[in-house]
Image 1 (cartoon, rainbow, N blue to C red):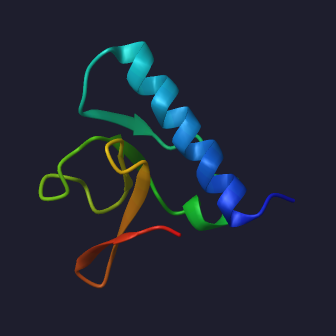
Image 2: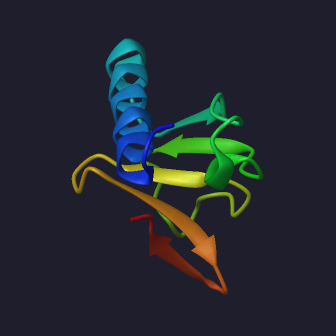
Length: 80
């Protein structure tokens, strides 16, 4: 079983690949990682979507920070 840090790395690598394939941002993808416990209830993975425009039912990958964010209690919080 992978640690959360390894799972985050896998998701970030996937986001980078999707961004490269599309050649544009922002992107919204259906979450293919439903088997990962902490991503189970997230519908979307949003790549380089401004947080003020992002859908709260998903996570946001911010490529400049190489970080994932989720909406928790009214705020976008970095996933660590």
